[in-house]
Length: 120
Image (tube, rainbow, N blue to C red; front, side):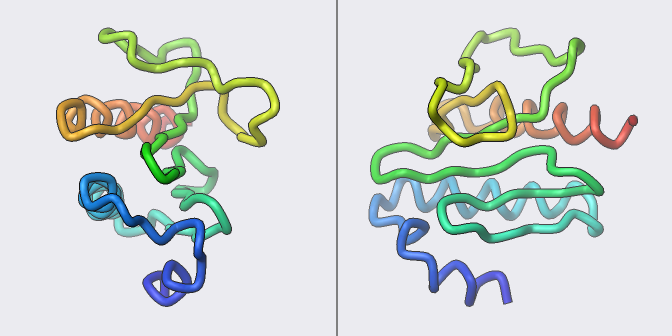
């Protein structure tokens, strides 16, 4: 069902194979965090909910942005996150670019975002 929705969204058709690989691997690992996580396909991004949304993946032609639910305890020790620029319609205030070289760290930030939500 999700795969069919993805194929219907032209903005989510990734032509850069590097971004596509990262995107698919993040999707797979996020869904393994908990079987009750909901994956919702939107026109420009995919959101992940566990009661509330805790992260979403926003692919562009050249980047894969990951948006995070954050609270006062959110730790980004490598300082790769940035504030979401004004004018971008996003529910979260922090985001980072996912790359092959920072994949594991990005996933730890996603886990942190999920854990903060799960703990509330």
